Image (tube, rainbow, N blue to C red; front, side, top):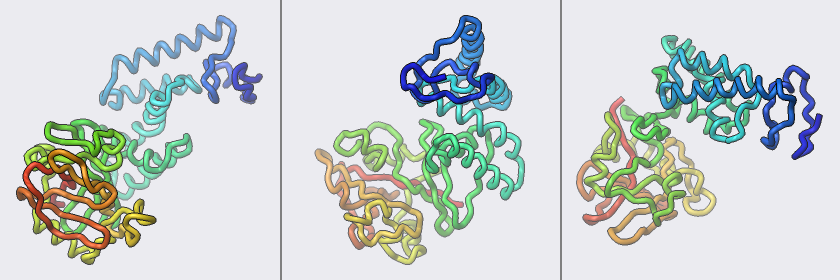
Length: 314
């Protein structure tokens, strides 16, 4: 049998082919006899009801994950929308296994989490996306992902479900990405939301203190200097290698801090993107600056907006 739209050969066993409601390659509905359509619609209606009744974070509760998995196992390609396919992938491959190991040892959890990531990669998720998915589900389920001395890890801000890489340096845990939490007196560079994803937001000093998630804070000047000393006082160790080919050619990011040249807001215009990073301090007007071949404490005027790297004690 070939798809009537893309002409892709659907070379599947008959018992599997009967479960398709649409072409798994292009998404066009497949023509079937009335009995098969009725069966598929009944399954999809039941799945839709489950998703509707147990939406949001509750969809990942143990009981609901079991119900969803049971319904999903009756379907081969139930959705055409990419977002829904991602939801299916999350539910089918991850939550039950995380529930089963949430009280296990650190080593067992790490092994199982890596296995969950492998599953997601086999269905087309990139490694970074797979890690973010597993981290978010682990947070919802309550299965802690431990922080090792040499491992990056993740923090999920439950206010907006943003997922951030974090890194342990010395006796502190730092955000390894710029904060993206939306609040008053915060800006996106050039008002372009694509820059929010890549560079985070820029905050006034007053909004910065309120923007940090519960349990996190702005770093003090002393914490910036102590962190810098612990990584060997090298600006290159802080700089993301994404910019090493042109803007920050010496970058090696050996600290996994992954600084990006996110620029700043000067009360009327945006400046210095792709040139330097300006990261806030706990004391007003103090900032940590990272440039071409230097990193140091600096001062900015009132009304400026800067990036945020949150910190907390181990």
